[in-house]
Image (cartoon, rainbow, N blue to C red; front, side):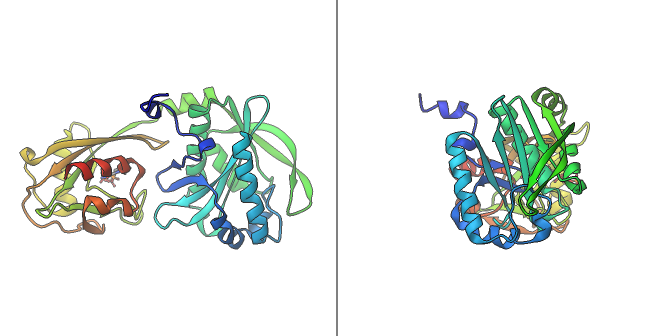
Length: 328
Ligand SMILES: Nc1nc2c([nH]c(=O)n2[C@H]2C[C@H](O)[C@@H](COP(=O)(O)OP(=O)(O)OP(=O)(O)O)O2)c(=O)[nH]1
């Protein structure tokens, strides 16, 4: 294997590589997660609809679960991944899969009560589905939900799963089994819907001050990826050039005026967000008129590229940080 081969091989959970979504990192559990798991899962409302969460739930149960996930991963039987929220690195759920001998895989997930109703399960599920179909070549995925858990059915529906009959499902916390609806999605069905996702063109700026610091903006509450630090900019409207869009956005968001000749193309981000594909040219800007002020409720920070890695950022922006470190 040449060194470049790393550029071609897809990330795989078998090797423990984390999967990023807009707001989450899907990563293997470690034993340091055990207290958090016990705090979240020792809750009847969490256990009652899931197959494998006993009740009550102690840290020893969490350690056994974490050990089992690592063993399953090493044996190629499946994996259980923590849903780590990017903004605060808190574990807010889990998602996992188990390989079947026929090349299909079963999925399961839960989200902590404090994070219910915010779309985290759908976001994680879409990302794992893409990994299983596109990177690992699995042909078909299926999942069962407890019959009294409509929220979980909705999550599967949003991810494109279709009803697939019923099966008996053991429920550890109740010590019995229930007849549960099954849902399934094939790789072909997924490919057809995934291929139809739109391409979103966004123009962004690295405003660089005389001290070599770059202006970062935090996404305001209520917007997708709220709280993450990004480069100022926004969507390119129909009929606009990326440059014109960026000049407009910098005026609207920061109250500064930038001439088109001051926009130097620097790099671009190209990133699959599951519901759209982002293409984002990044321009270096060293000269502008006015002082940047937050006009849209965003936070602003001047940051040295060497410190940017410490800030929670949209996953699309991570490769841009390395370029800025080299270049600024
Ligand atoms: N501006 C900007 N957007 C980014 C970055 N990284 C990244 O993934 N994005 C994504 C987040 C959004 O999905 C999209 C930008 O959309 P936006 O909602 O901020 O665009 P906008 O300012 O036109 O806002 P709106 O009028 O639609 O509310 O690009 C980045 O560094 N800067």
